[in-house]
Length: 296
Image (tube, rainbow, N blue to C red):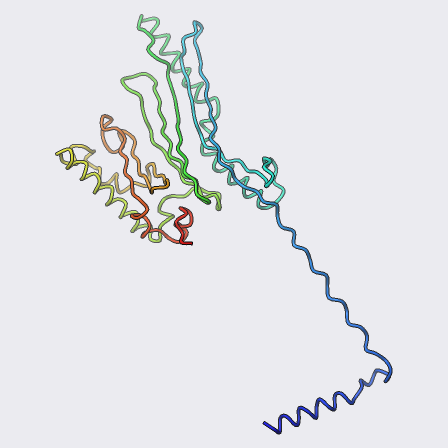
């Protein structure tokens, strides 16, 4: 160790005693170049997607003032806004481009309900029925109707919509259809409930078994066999649960079947609910984040 210390000292002394050959003794070395100026990174101005409920309603009357048809839709709509609250019509940044695309995809899901075509078709059907009744001397009972009510649940990343569509176009009774969709605001795309799971097959099987368990409970409470309350193939229908109306809210997940889908019309809609204590063991980290269940 002493040998390496002596050699190092000699080298340092030698370096101090010798001037560079190309420099005169009194000449100073050239000044070093100044460091490059720091490049200022321009951050994109913030933008956001805001969710509003929009009402669409109208009606049609006959020549004598009889109301023939009416519709009323309460639908969710995403709007892209800048940080100052102004609505973005044309994107100026990549973030705004993504946000506009997400809003267009989401709003497109409901576009068929927001044009004049549904009312026009409903009015034509109603007018034909009204004229036939007038010729036959049968009283006109009520206007043909279409309605849509939507319940919306939103986390930081997920928008879950549960919709109840009601229609009356004559006949013995009105019709009710339950619908739902789930939208990832970050990716700008709709997703299926299985996409929230770590193991989609295990998750799907667990939900099916829970639906069947609840069916058995209903049957037992009514003192009947499940086959007497539901269609003969209700087990196969339950296994395909994610193809029906699946939505989320603050308490958990709802799987809903419209009248006629799982049982007769008289049995009404069939609603199955599962809380987050049941769901969470099956969820992936991404699924927990979407549902705002991620641990802080």
